[in-house]
Length: 489
Image: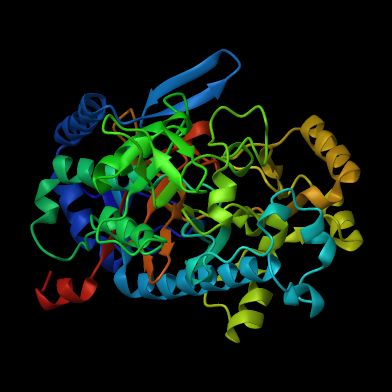
């Protein structure tokens, strides 16, 4: 891999490994020098080791197709992404600020709705949101926090600055893959972890446990915490099992729990019923309680909402938190930060056009070939139009959808997403576009992961990073360059 810095080119995009002069960026210096010291056959050997480890450890995800559910090995690239610790401090502060404001917003919506009365957000935005749940009105979760686990997607544009692409506050997934990516990289590139310049991230399971334990309605030394999963056929089941095991919590399905006459939740055990204090639920709102929501649901627990409203069990994330997950609400988050916190947003939003606004809609319809169009409440990269990569027929379809239901669509410019190198199947090192999903925990305290889950578009020129859409992933290094400078590296 000699002279990688001379051969590697990603212009006109901001590359996170090498600057426009061909020099390694400060946090990437040691990594670049190491890669250049390895012969191609050694690098290929490391890649094969990673693939074998993924198979051995059973790290997988499920893709839903017309032919059925398909389990696939986790797509992993062995070249880490590097971010300067000083840059990350700014992003971390911005993420804490954002989730604090969003939780105040959700709590306000289910109580006094001052943000609507004061004209910060239009009433119809909330009224028309499928994620606003009237059943949650008047409930006051501990600490006023509704979204305890948030996955916020960040991107870097051509200027190298972080922007928020979207917030995921319903049932965000991916953190187990962030942790497994680090474990894989330590096995494949162990030499690079011999000093303390790469900041650790393995404290997450403990931080998650502390976040959940603080929510317990019973003040007991060891609250009973369970992870509620839809079951083995869910695409994120690997993560559900992983997190339960890492926290020392029970992994349960709806049939393992019941709500008794005292409006408390109990878990069935071989020793008899055991009261549950906190449920980390990985089931969508409308399926968690057939008594309150979808009556045909076999995934949830009858009476669960009754127990939650009575204050006898904590649910994380709280039902109804998804109202702030709406991509239309996203456009108002900077105003919400100013309103609730009296602060300027630390992290910027991507410029967003609301198709319900006449002027915005006319612009979007006239520029479908240039914009990214997203439905308000989809996830996983589904239901999107990536204008520059779309056909005329696809654009016509979206024009019709927008005209029929303008409230349901937003549009954003096609960003010049930053790049980082991947090792291709041919053994080349080429730039690919990527994003980043850090995870923020909030209850009594607020915690942000050191970096997050980097998702990368494995196809050349593609902007789609979701694993379900053919994307991959890599380890994310937050690098303390001051340590590097002090050691003269």
